[in-house]
Image: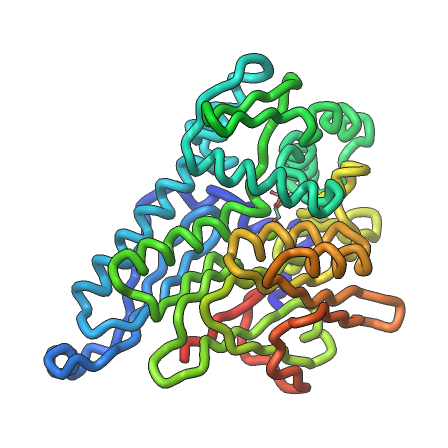
Length: 368
Ligand code: AMP
Ligand code: MG
């Protein structure tokens, strides 16, 4: 596992890597490219872009480099547009502008913001409040604490908590409006927007006829059809089991996968290790949070459920995920005897073996 300093917060959930020019890289085998295109041979291309506080990686198969590249750029434009809507770091994002307007009138919002907010409320209800998109004011207090390197003052947390609660959002689907009922509310889409953006990027690729593709938004992965001649994309998961020297991998297609955990963003203070995920009931960041991997029909569902199941007790998490069509989960909790592993019905595990891990990162798509 990647080594972290006590202030492990290199990649805030959304928007931190916005400054400067977008770096888009393309890697593809160049030799014989024209020949391959002439023969109609599918080649594998990889593109990456830093956005939403993470790196988006696209892997796709196409016969021609130019068309592959244009499609990837179109998918990345979609990601950029979504960042401009959901960012919690860009003051001019639609989200933060909406929150600045404060409590009061219903406000018209973009279809994207409405859709993700509606989903957020659905996952909140499904998880008994564990997933909470109104957690923003509390997240801000913990973010400051991480910067300061010490746990926040309980009084400040209690104050911030007063401006949370999904019951304080009213949606009107016909008018496509959002009404915030309390002053100082702040929506935080950090637990769901990357999965949605990965789905949307994949949708753009599909609209250009590219189905054999995968979009990995730093561990929130939207997966298309299987690569040529393969049963699916091999996904290796790092969710805490690697501490026992175990490796978990799955071969998937046409699904979403997400992993939540505190490997990359946490605060160590007073002997406790606090996650970037917060229990909305107490406004306290999770201590010793589990590693949760969710497989679902799409990445928005996997992303939201992985965050929610980090908060719920394991048993409750298992029944939450089993209530969602096509969803399954693996939860690795840190018990007294070390890592403990629970898998829900239908989890598509193909391999769990003791092995030296080669890769770094919370989750890695192995590009067949
Ligand atoms: P993820 O990495 O997808 O689990 O999302 C974690 C991010 O979601 C955090 O960095 C916060 O921005 C946000 N968040 C924290 N706690 C919650 C929660 N209980 N419900 C929804 N979002 C949360
Ligand atoms: Mg999530």
